[in-house]
Image 1: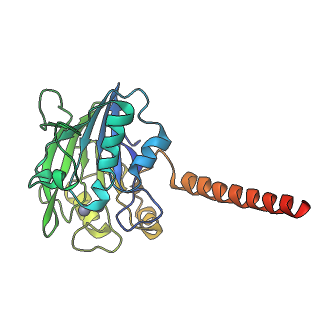
Image 2: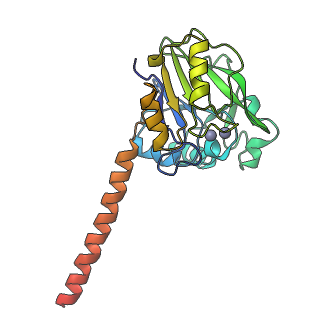
Image 3: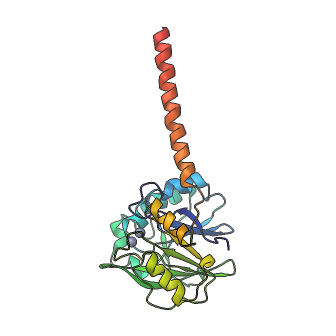
Amino acid sequence: MSQTLKFLGRGSAFNKSEVNNCAYFKKGSVLVIIDCGNGVLDAIKKSGIMKGVKKVYQIITHCHNDHVADLPAFFDYCNDELKIKPNLLNTISLQGGKVEKLGLKEGRDFKFVEPLSKNFKWVNVLLVPHAKDMDTCALEINFDNKKIFYSSDCSNIPFDIPNYDEYYLDCSESGNKIHMDIKKVKEIIKKNKIKKQQVFLMHIESQRMLDIAKEEGLKVVETVVSPERNKVQNIKKELKTEVSKENKKQKDNEK
Ligand SMILES: [Zn+2]
Ligand SMILES: [Zn+2]
C-alpha cells in the first residue's frame, strides 16, 4: 500500500537531522498542509510544491513549537512572495489567543476557515490527549477516495478507529507520557484490526526509532526531500567552500 499523504518532514522536536513532522496533499491548485514546524519553509522551497498553487489551507494540530515554528515565515512567504492569502483551519487547538501570540493577525496574514465548511470538506477534527496542558487535533481526512486517520501528536487514541484505509501514527522511541510508543501503537493496531501495511509511522525521534519500526515490520513515512539528500547537499556545499578557499590560498601563494 503506498502512502497517500506526502511529507516535507517526519522529525520530532528533538530530532536534529530531520525537518519537523509536516504532511500535505494537493488537489489541483489547492494545497492542504498539516503543521509548520522547524525546517518546513526551507523544505517547501526546496521541494517546489508551491508550483501552480493558488489556494493554501493550513491546519495546525496543536501549538507546540515543532508544529508552529515556521508558520509566521510561511504566511509571510505566501502573502509577500506568492501573493496568496492563506486560509487557516479554525480548530479548537488555536483557541485562547494562540495565533496572536505567534504575531499573526486574521485578515492581515490569513483568513480563518471552519472545519467541514462549504469550502473545506476534506478534514474532520477529532480531539485526542497529548501533553498535560495541551490536547491536540487528530484528523480524519477524506482525500483521493481514501479515508485517512492522522493521529498528530498524542499519548493515546481513546476511541475506536476502525475502517480507515490508511493510518498515520506518531510513535516515540522512549515511550514518554505525551507520545505513543511502539507498544501502544501495536495495541491500537490490534484493537482496531488494522493491517500493518495500512500503517505509516511519523514524528520520529531518532535512527533507533527507524530500526524499531523495521523490526516490527512497520513502515515509516517517506519525505519528498529525503534527509539524505539534504545532508548530501550540505556536505557538497561545505566541500565547495573548502575547495574555493584552497584555490584562493594557492593563488595568493603564486602571487
Ligand atoms: Zn506536541
Ligand atoms: Zn510534535
